[in-house]
Image (cartoon, rainbow, N blue to C red):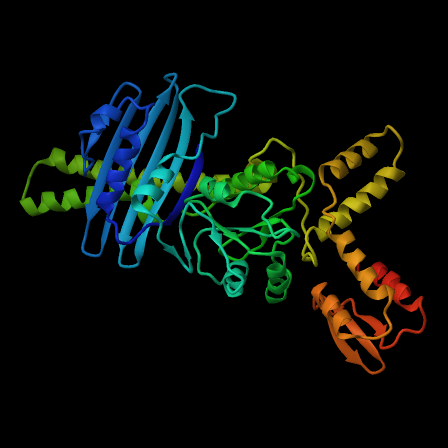
Length: 467
């Protein structure tokens, strides 16, 4: 069972041999490895194979004209039954240097549940000894990318999937005190080799960014995960279950890890493909030598077939996992809670809008349900587990203050309305307000207020129509 998977660019000034040396240092420096001592004086190269009763390590290296590939497979047994397998395979060409790290676990005997395992320590070694490479417009690192006020375009490219990244981006927004809600440095350490961590400089930065990305940015202390394909985002709001920064950090890390399991690994960065390349090379060397040793030919043919079979099994496992994940949305949540998944084609006008509306409707339904009945308990449970984000109330409070004394469209009133997400169009004797550029909900506002109640009446009408 695959429990961890990631792939990311490495420093192109380093070589595949550097990758093997990094893997050697990883095991030789482990206080928990039986192979540590022997690896301190053994260089990993093509064909190296070492083992003890509970551990084994194999290394392989293949070089051709335009590409060099190296990898290590490390196996460790626990209690003689549970087997952990870590594959580290890197491939370098003129297009870049990419490494994949995969961790899987299986058991010879039936067990009720297999542990997911910790994030492989080799990722830390890769960052320290080899270093991250360029991933589109961002650099792979174990440190957060802290944006400056002038770097609005970088944030916009990340959120709109224009940064050409292969890795997801964890975007950490600033709260009203211009501080991140979670610890970006610690989060970047946890997610090194898995995702970029980008930190915005201030709350005012997020207001400017909002206009550039049509409101798709996380803001006000929220954390968003943005996928490189641009299909959706995952948002964590600093309320409810995530009102504790550490709990949010854990949830973000779990979400990134579980999502990466469905990512397709580049074939040239898999152990099976590396074994296939080596088997082909040895067959070719055998042919060129003029050897008539049938057993050697059979041995190398069997090695190539075994590598292909392993690749088939890997692809079948990925397909099964994808199907299973679709059937059970909570199976990849990384937590023990039971989740519900609701389909929706609408986008949020503000953070948590759809969830807030659903929770508010469920609360009303729970209040109307029979006391001590099953329906009431289920609805109340969902309401309690999904706290209101508070964004709606904050927007309404600001909007009410703006319209309370409204008598004309001054520059300050216009700026406030635009900051809240309204576009303002002139329509004869009136203004037409459009929220987040959605023409389905136009609102007509008089150019001059009729009396002191006019602004509050407009606020009430706007609230009913849009909020």
